[in-house]
Length: 129
Image 1: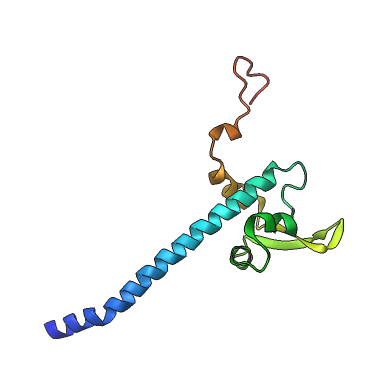
Image 2: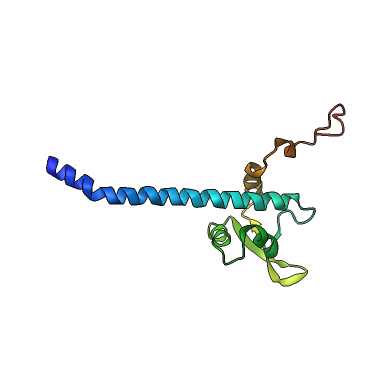
């Protein structure tokens, strides 16, 4: 029985190492995608117009061109969905996050200073929130 246990452990050791490396790589990609989506979401929310409808050129400025891995992964996971075309240019696709709540979810961790959420005006709270 000890022979079988030892040989079984030896046989599965390369598989275990492979899976460990694979999980580490997937986690790193997930972190990169979340950070990129966070930058995209925050940039979109900072715009004066069209907070939730994102032109392809705008998305590309953050995630890279539509054929790059980050853009493709965001689309494959349905975090970004094609929702139409730009009114001023029918050739340019427009994307949106799966739901505005997810856009806000991704944006929140990318904010480095909590003051971003507050419009606090010292000594005059009626002007701020």
